[in-house]
Length: 165
Image 1 (cartoon, rainbow, N blue to C red):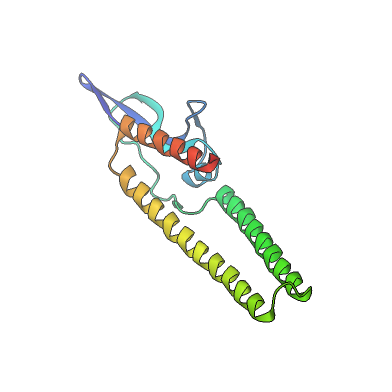
Image 2 (cartoon, one colour; image 1 turned 45 degrees about the vertical axis):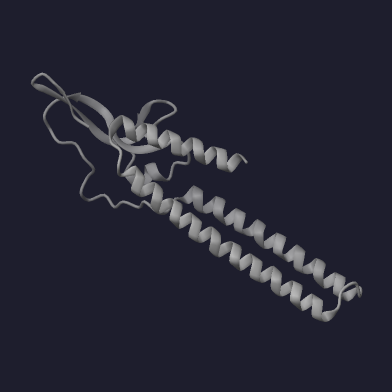
């Protein structure tokens, strides 16, 4: 962002800004910045100074907004946990059928309900996730400078509340 101070302007370069340490990580590309798990953002608030030059991302840099290695690892781990729970439920139903506690017909119906429930849950989570991502991306485009930092803070706090409860 440029701030007009008389005849001079303050120009800031694009960089990987750490909001917790309130400092820029030197020498990182936008992709490397996006792979850092936590409170960093690619912003035009690094190395601010007085001047008239244009600062911006390099035209040769490839930007990846939708893939993050830490997020992939977390989602993969959570997916394995879901598979484990589904296997336990199906094994419980199989044991109940083998022990004679439930009939073959009831067993088939309950197993089908487990798989249908898992599928519907997955589709609902997918739709909700894509919808919230699109909504947040659209809303983020409405803000500039300090308002953008406040918006990012509100989104981070909302995310932490949702993940906590």
